[in-house]
Image 1: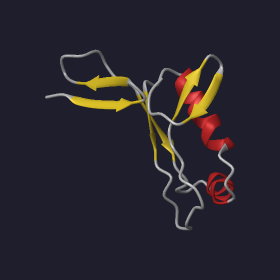
Image 2: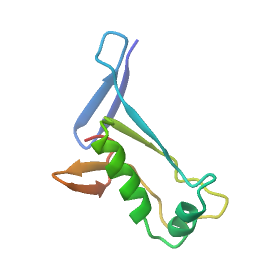
Image 3: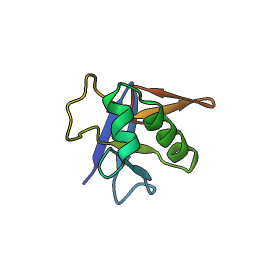
Length: 93
């Protein structure tokens, strides 16, 4: 069995026959007041900083959950690295 994650012409395959895949998590506003507040204001700098740190720590894929009790004005998405910069818009680096 394989799980394929594809985004922006990049693909990560998760399978027992493949090397270990590191999935970064905890990028969600649940029990994170500062993150929930900044996301509700349309400020995704905390999300991008969390994503950057997880990628630098070795994450291949990020699990971003933008759901919060309050509706958001714009969607949030996962991030990937481009040099030393983190850009929103894709699942993998």
